[in-house]
Length: 84
Image (cartoon, rainbow, N blue to C red; front, side, top):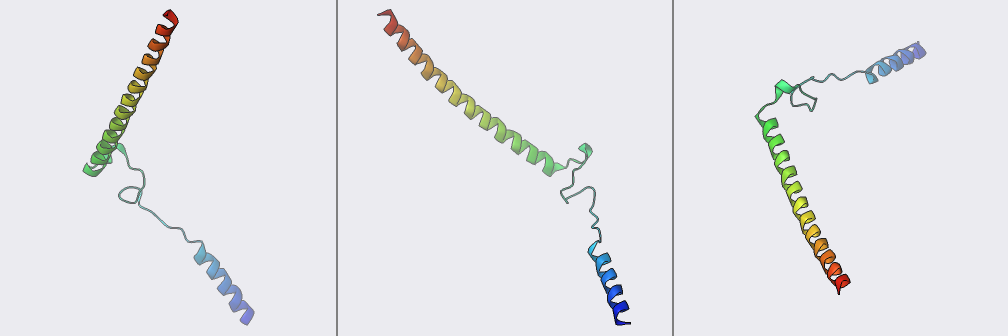
């Protein structure tokens, strides 16, 4: 009788451990939402991210232009030395 109770207890504990959790398919749970579900927060967040990316790209472009000018000056100096 005791062994039957242990077996039943073991079976029930295994069933409890395998319970599934159900999540909401949409909303604030972090699940992907459809295109029509964009609210003001999502739009504002996307706008902020886009602004940051454009600002970062402008900074990188300015640095590249500066490097290009420096390299062009070096090339001009080397060409002048070759002409002498």
